[in-house]
Image 1 (cartoon, rainbow, N blue to C red):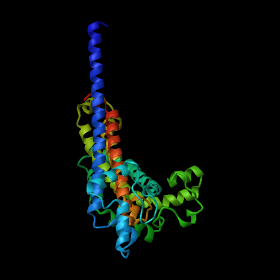
Image 2 (image 1 turned 90 degrees about the vertical axis):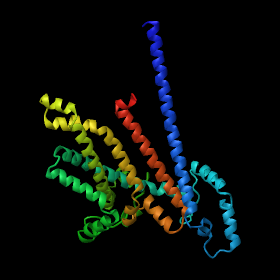
Image 3 (image 1 turned 180 degrees about the vertical axis):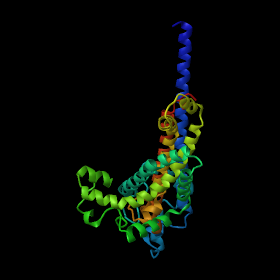
Length: 355
């Protein structure tokens, strides 16, 4: 290699390193800005809502001097900007105060209930991906046919029907009429005290402990709310899969593959779907994040002891520390999954790394 070539290669390496540093800096700026924005939104929601945290703690009949002393302890007598800085400092350390409803630190309650929400959203996303991707592929391959219309109607219903109405209807039909599933809740009272969870993820704990009777009971409890969330995830994933597949099937490499005599099955599943899988990773990740933040009504209807039900009960009891803490956790998880999906997109698609 000549001296000129060495200098050229060094300049290219320096340019790549600089581009990587700038990309990393932009990434960090986006993360910090988004999280601070989320902190600001939750803080001002807590101040706009006509609920006095001091009154929520001491009660409406407490003397005025007691209420004022509690307000001073909470820092509510300080200027708004000071309250915001204190809120940000505490939130960054994971301190969202104490729950009025349970008298526990909010983060302690969230660590207890959040695994149930993760478990429910994971089952819903799994159902949505397993059935949504093949249905989307079928709709794209059979574009304009009856199969395509059926898949599109299924997706339209998933987008249009309110989840609370569909949940109540499913309970009446599958539980009250047919008795195919267990009653609302996460586990039967028979096993509630004989089963000791370790990780908080009941399905995983029951499998690790070899408690197959408990696992079957857990399955009968989770299948209906998980299937309901899976249906809404399926509607989104199938629609996006159809769109991605239609785009891939119109590309020139598909025409070339058919000209070479490759079977239609190989072209669809090993060529078109593999290229469509890159953006599908992002779609599935965002669908998972959406189920984590959007399972409040589902958990309420099915008495599922997750973060959604915890936030609902806290809101009904004017427990704003718990409401804001739960909102912050869900928002932070959504931001993390969104950023992770972007990273996976860049890892799986080499074309984006050259930009």
